[in-house]
Image 1 (cartoon, rainbow, N blue to C red):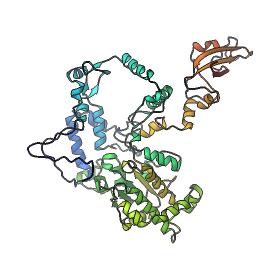
Image 2: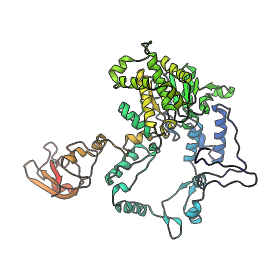
Image 3: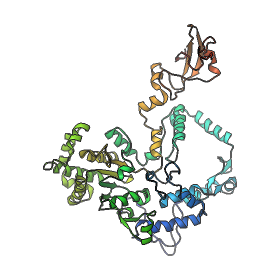
Image 4: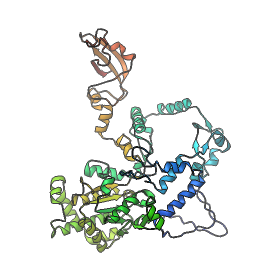
Length: 533
């Protein structure tokens, strides 16, 4: 038995209770039934119907379905980050997405009466499912230690409690500002700005647990932390390699892309220790004829099952095979691309040559023949996409594995052109937008300079929220001063500063006005700013 593995054994007379907070306790004996049906299709339709009935959403649910993932006229499903169809598909939906959206529309509410009836000690024994199933909060609540209950608090007092806690910290880095991909870009920007005005970069988000390895590897390899392909690239690729992904649950709308790829003759290689439902066949729900005829479409042309954590060795083996082939086949490598756009090729070639096939087979759990099958698919395809999810990133060597993906792509120039490149599968709808707008606990100097113009402040030895003296110089050479103001970084071009009226009015000379309009020049005042004396 693997150390630390807890096994639940069911007995007819008495069943060990599940650990509190992990989910609803099942009724009766545990059961297991292999799933032989195609991914999505009628199985998904049946599950969605039951869910809509249970949630009482037989009217609003279908209405939402008709607007989900419509470019410009609808809304993005919060279930995953798979892109919207670009050709006007009206039912770009999936089982998970419908359930997500239906829950967003829930009428269930948790008011003060609920918390008055249930103590925190009692609620701590409830499962996560049962807690969320009560519904949405209706007002701010605060914990009262004397009664062990949550009690109502006004918004004003709630903000004051938060502000008092933040002001009372000995160091801003004692605070942490967490968010997830459910936050929009505008709110994201303001949220990270608040944290950095407080004085901390402690901005963890859900991608720290998911695709942090991808971001670091891609940044180091390509200079960008994001994937380089879009949905149009998926539609034109000759080969798709899907690693560590179960599309049926992680990104179900990928099934449409996989089915279309199969129909046009593309090769689809799934690499996963388990052959999941999405790596077999599907019935895409918006293909009404297929649904009516129960006609399935294959979603894979090759399934490889490496040992857990063996993807790095598999990728190295594929690269080794391509390099070995190049000794007799000049088309195996894109030498022009390698010479013009890459660095370190000879060192990487030597590393692959020094990695013995026996070690590759041992670490990957695959035979050399199986690895050569995947390499052959890659070598024969003109345009290849490698897509991956948490099955690759959540390992000790996750960064190295993603970098090996990039190495493999670079060997044949599968970057910067249509139908080719790296494609990490994000799990939430706006994780990538969050990072772009500043949710990052390891921000670059370039981002901070653009956000806060720290270059100007550093040159003048001005600290964030540091006291400064400001002196204005009028057209006639006269000067006016304000002392002891606090400098706050904002997104403003270099050489510029902003201040509030009427506090800054004293810096404006009455004699300075525009000859064109006779208006006072109050928005264009020459000032000198430095640390307070």
